[in-house]
Amino acid sequence: MTVLCLAVAAVIRVALPVTEFTLAWTHSVERIRWEEDYRVDGDMLSAVTARVRGSGAGMEPPAGAELRNGVWHYRPNVPPLRRLRLTVSPYAADYELCWKGHCTRLTDLVAMPEGGGVVEASACPDARVRD
Image 1 (cartoon, rainbow, N blue to C red):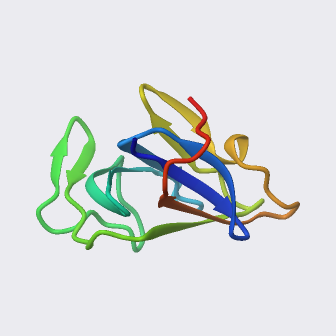
Image 2 (image 1 turned 180 degrees about the vertical axis):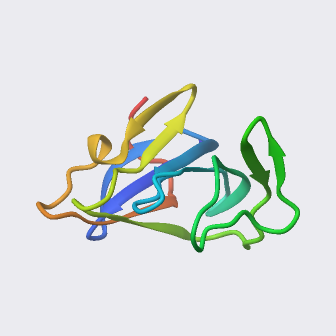
Image 3 (image 1 turned 45 degrees about the vertical axis):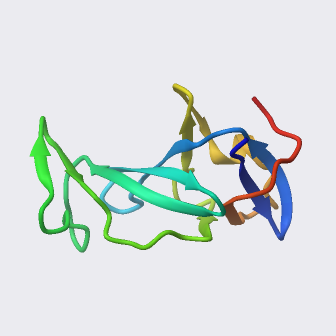
């Protein structure tokens, strides 16, 4: 079974039985939504596709992006990653993690220290999973 683990301070807080997921967030200044689709490949996370619902200062869609119905679609040009480090801050909107047709705020999945912190998302060995 493919499992995505979310850890805070190197402690796994939740394990999700997924092979694909979407990470979404709203840019803190421009208030524009970004979405990135990932696939869990063995012990790596591969960015498959991405979307941004506009552009703004320092956040233009990359070369080759296609505009469809007001949304830029593109394929991220990044190698597979061992982990995604997601900084949670009280000064920015929370991330959303979407899988199997539903989305959940990241802080609803993992208990965060007051004031925020870093969540690490990674592929992990089969563990006790949350459906």
